[in-house]
Image (cartoon, rainbow, N blue to C red):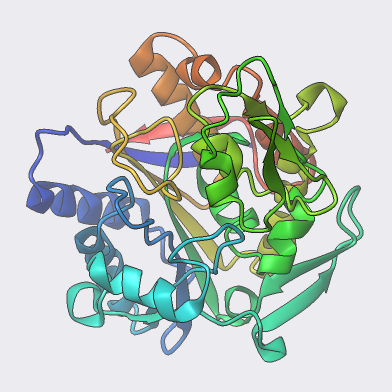
Length: 356
């Protein structure tokens, strides 16, 4: 049976107030939150954006979502996990500060922001899943202990997975730092010496000090490397990449196994909203203002994260009139994550698009 994906179009010419109105109309029509009961704590899994990034879902749109949840007499809160790579979102204090500086305050959104410190054992849960790669998933407890879960994602390209949407927001986004390392740890990049200029940008961003310059060329210590891909993003000369032909693409399947750990706990108690606005080549973790790769498309919502991501991917391709994300990330096949999620029963690749 096909899953329903609800869609309302949005243009970059729309004012934020217009987009807020469209979002409210979408949620009312989709009846997305009918599973939420009075007095429940509802976790909205967010990405608050890195400093200098402008692609993240804006707080005024979260205000609409929180209001709709409160109409169910439930209590929403916004949450995310700390990052594996170095930056302002590495620890809970600085992460909360960047969230507030981007406008995600209780006054603006109508919800508390909670960013658990995963250095504390009581904030972490070990979930036995016994999948192909992951036997025990290490996730932040808030996402599995909340009475209900709403994934709110910015759909965009991604340097490691081809694209990021609802599934990545849950699979990578709900993991502890140890869990993120577990997903990345076998993805050690290699250096193409002919392209390397010795600029040192990769050395500066490496959080594990795994890169040094030798004879004016980058050299990566695979033992120290944590596979976070910060160096790939920092290199402007295409001198660093992952050896995909030797299994580097397993990160997508590990990510989906992590998503299954969370969503199996929240089965029948989760919904997903993707914003196909300011669709960029790279994710919101990069501290820069990337341009759009296609015009704004709209907002999509579903109870099925697989159908939702597939619908977003299809709409981006239709708008670009080609597979632009594969063009931008030629070695990253984003369909791999969708097919594996479908195989694990997280949702359906087939869907009905309901235009609002």
